[in-house]
Structures are given as structure tokens and as C-alpha cells.
Amino acid sequence: MQITEVKINIMDEDRLKAFANVTFDGSFVVRNMKIVRGNKGLFLCMPSRKMADGTYKDMVHPINQDFRDYLEEHIMKAYQQALTDKTPSEQTAAVAHAQ
Image (cartoon, rainbow, N blue to C red; front, side):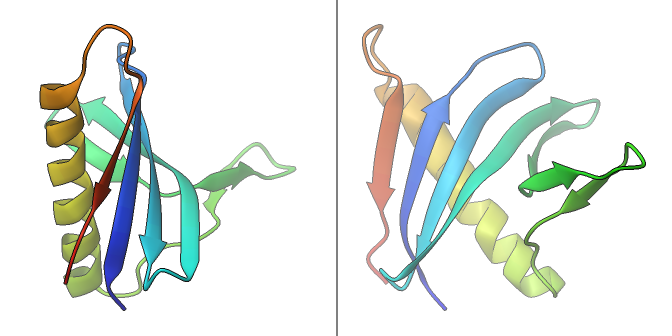
């Protein structure tokens, strides 16, 4: 499975820095991943849903560390590029990944 596009929507709030939508193989998209600033720096949160008991459960997630690393590397690279390319009137950046 290859990442073919990453779209970044800059939020630049205190903790929530951006949303990411990722397309795989030009055929499948996962929306609303979050780039969050924590105590140890930026990290990626998977899309989640609030459960009846008040806890949150990830709707999708990588099942191994290698794929998580691959996903985070591409999303963080696209986020940094979006910050670099950002103009005052620009809120979204798309980065295509030719594999």
C-alpha cells in the first residue's frame, strides 16, 4: 500500500496543528487524522469516535510499527511543506507522493 496523496489543513491552534487526509494507491482515503503538539513534540492521532462511556476509540489505525512510521513520516513531511508554502490566504496544501 503506497501513499499517493496527503492533504494538510492547517489549524494552528494551541495543541491541534492540522488535519491530514491521506489517499492510498489513488483508491482509498482516510480523513481527519490530527497532527497534535504534545509535551514531547508533534504526533499523529488517528480518526476516532466518542463512545457511549465517554472514551474515544480509533476508527482506523496501523497494525504494525513499520507502517505507522511510514505514515507518520509522510504526513509530517507534508505538514512541514504546508507550513513552508503557507501564505496568509492559503489554508490547505496537497502533496502528491510519486512512489
